[in-house]
Image 1 (cartoon, rainbow, N blue to C red):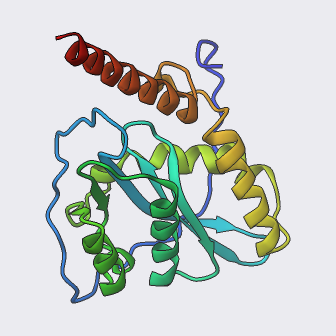
Image 2: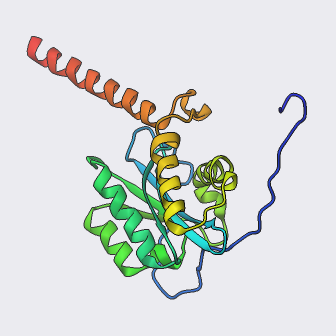
Image 3: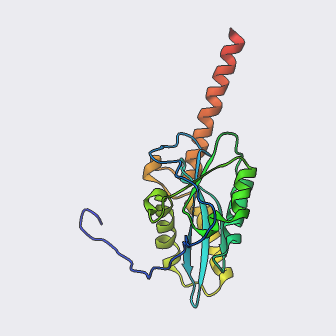
Length: 215
């Protein structure tokens, strides 16, 4: 399509999901010009809206900055802080954090809430936030949201919240993470990319152990 100049552009109305007008503590950007070299080094978090037939739902998600895998998510009916907390707890239950981890988000109310910040601190996770009015600081979330909407959400008319939850859960867990190829990952899906990465780590550790035994 690109070579023949055949492009598809889907126009959708914009719905704001970030409320930065609050008096809660904000944190500096810790990931400027940092390129992650392992899984669980940087998590990116953001929220997007999901259009149902007669109303909106909201998806909070976290992706690994190295593998692009969705590590946690939650779908809710409102833009409450509880939505992002659920997504964060989902990510923490799915991942085994063994090294230093930085959590990056915007300065929205949901990510600055005391409950959310306390969970990060309790798990020794560094807190990083985009500069105000600079969405490019968290640009790695956009490809995921765009893929989700173009390949799933815009293809269907969800009649209910429950239908949207079921379909989006299937897309994230069965399609995006496990089957969809990513050019930035060498044209493998995130799940396979992480599997290959972990195999390399285990092989390297085994070689070092054998060398110590031999010496």
